Image 1: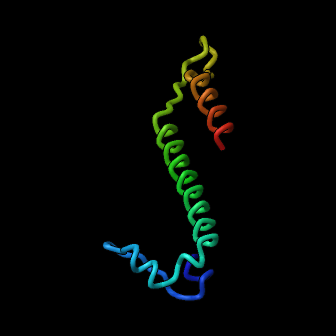
Image 2: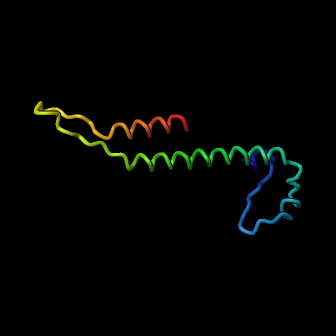
Image 3: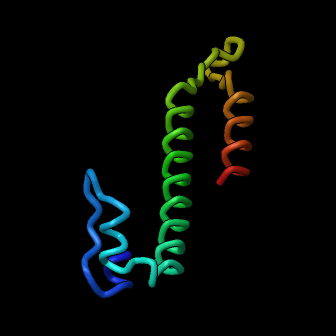
Length: 92
């Protein structure tokens, strides 16, 4: 995204130095770079939150219990799932 906005290739690599930034005159594009960095940080937070939510749901189990002698079942463990769902709705 930075490359697209500044008009030349910016491809950091292992060992990328401050001097390389200066040589590319990236200080002229500070506002653009800060904006892209903030968006990337927010996107990363969303992705990690979503992964955490998915992981939490993997452990949720519903248990079917026979309801008297009617041949039907009730769902047990629903309260924990509802609490988790409420929490994730607020986070989302």
